[in-house]
Length: 402
Image (cartoon, rainbow, N blue to C red):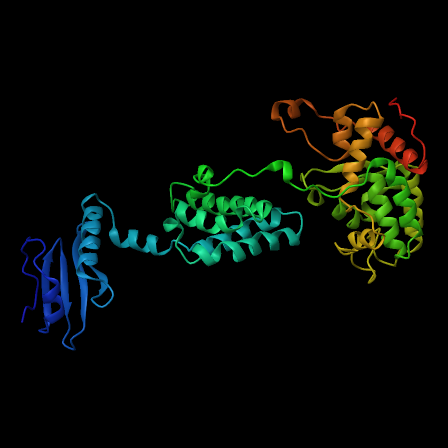
């Protein structure tokens, strides 16, 4: 019986045949501190004995049925190098076992990002696209093992058929892997290394939000007002058009955000895409809409345009559904485009005023540092002119800025 290690420093003493056939209980040395331990019940497992920080330690490397002789030797050599350099291979092994799979990392990143997203729907879509297009390919892989080939395999089936979705999926993969780089689980981001491996998309074919020509918007508003939709829905959609705001901003409008005496609507930063408070000047027609909305306000409800249940906002689909029922080739967001085209072609207001009216921020950081004003008074003149234009459906005279 080989009851204890021999202490010899020979390497590769064992053979695969011996590992399979040996039955006598004991320790059988192979070199680099690696031993095959045979128990009295015939079970066989790998053990490595090393001196770590001046203490002898036994490291379990796994059973023979799971870890081959070659794999055990590779682990033993790796751990011995760590120990000789003053490290702790046991701690390093624990750290390595803590590395998550891509799916686990994505769920963690999703939880981290969730408070910063403007609505729950976007957060749900973020994770849903990874579940559908990525997890089946490498969701179960540890993040340090994900390769550019894995990313390419997930994106290739949808790159040409669903180009917009594919670009978003690639960006989301990249976000997850950037987080793993920050965690020191890997040093590179494969999502950034595959640009040359994928064909370029023809961005000219990207479909934009459906929008009406600006000279048709006035007639569209008239049609909306005559529709059989609920009063709250009709008022909300007209208010959206007049203020050139996004659907979520209008549907979530609260009475506590509106100062009728000053004719201003202050949308808080947490409800804005750019996460900055946005002041909206209210023209004459907006004030009338708010007065009509006040007449249907339920007790204790702070929403300006409540849904059918009163205490909640209109649903995301409500405004879009009305436009479809009226057979209008437009979506709510498209009215922002109609407004911008009108402002650019039919007025002399500066570009900055028109962009600020849409809550678009200056992208150049140096320029933005000096642009402290939101040009509110000039925007008030612009929005008054927009309201007057919509009231005069057939008027084509050019509106002049003051």
